[in-house]
Length: 133
Image (cartoon, rainbow, N blue to C red):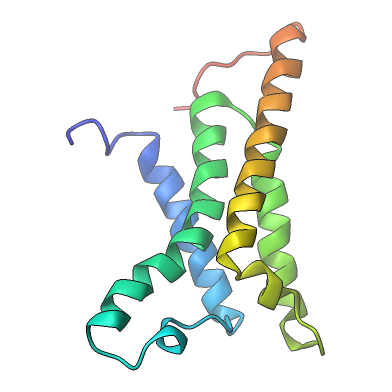
């Protein structure tokens, strides 16, 4: 467990927490109380509900800090910003963005985009993959 908290995971965890906070400020319509009547089920479902948005901020942050891969972070930031801005419309984007299945697809797409950037940067001259920190 000693290697889990380091100079790469701390900034990415902060970005994950910021992502969850912005979605909560957007009056996130997926509430952990929707899945339970309280009690132990609420305690078990709350971390699962918040895990997806946390990972949507933390994984791109980790890719940026550790591998200098930039593109997944603005994409994730744009999706979160759009969910925040579109929260008052008739069919808000946040209802789609808060679906746990969609989180898995978005994370997969962000990793594929990041890997593509990694490959392009690998052949580009004068571009380093050294960590930012």
